[in-house]
Image (cartoon, rainbow, N blue to C red; front, top):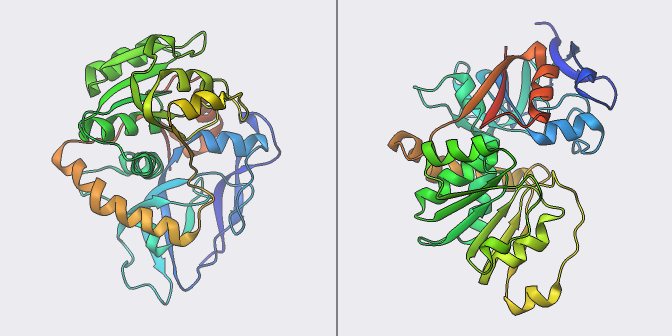
Length: 325
């Protein structure tokens, strides 16, 4: 068996053009791992940040091959793996390296792909829905909560919308694109959409929101506190708008608010195994019931990863962008 494979590699920090399909070394399989032949991989904002040199891969992960979620077929298993056998269709999260023909994955981080799903659909689910489900569990969403989701048309935003609606919440969403808000309302039950071309100051929602899921960060924090109700909860999930913000601590105290930050990629293998198992037990059945559905906006050939990243950075997608071999 050849030790080489094809992968989309970051040849230097920069724009989408620095992504090139090149030969790479096939991952070495450890005893607790599964070697997956990748058929499709999701494209995420974190991949673009890694490409720019702003989000380094964690230890033990390829530095120059992005990709945080994958779907494919088990090629081989490590000597301590009993749960999977070659030929199984699987999907899951990784710390990086999914833009490749093969990826080595902790066996506990894999999920069986439902029979009715394509590999492209499966690749759109793990990162978005595990992130969203974990975020909502951290802030304790309840039926009849009023939830605000920033960047609601993104892959994680739409996962949050579906999960929050399934829990009985009323959802308000923001986006820079009116068409995304209209589609989210028409197809997924978004109660109200707010276009944010000029930013978000929270004034029109003052004191009305119980839970805020913020995928933008930066300057939105001030408006979040304005919109928040007493005992409200804010969870910051993404930082596309920037890493720093000014905060009125007096308002935070007066509202007795909870402010939480979360990230998935840098968590320990044990934590990721818990989140994966929780997703498989609590969330995956909802897809079969029809409460949730994978949302694939567009599929690009893996060799055209640069074009996929350009599309991502134009913020044209409603849901997930997927690369497929």
